[in-house]
Amino acid sequence: APTRKQLRARPVPGRPDWETYRNTRRMIAELKALAARLLPQAS
Image (cartoon, rainbow, N blue to C red; front, side, top):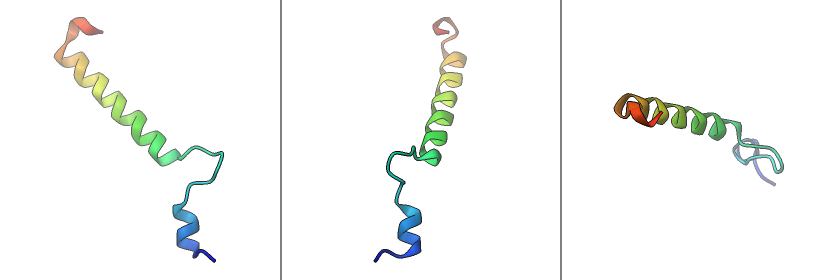
């Protein structure tokens, strides 16, 4: 049987991995902000 730590580490099927989702959203937002600063004509 898996330990409690292994159960916590494994993502729940059918449910998004919220930590990865938030980190990805934040990374995309930072990239967009950087691009807007470097390339004002792109936005």
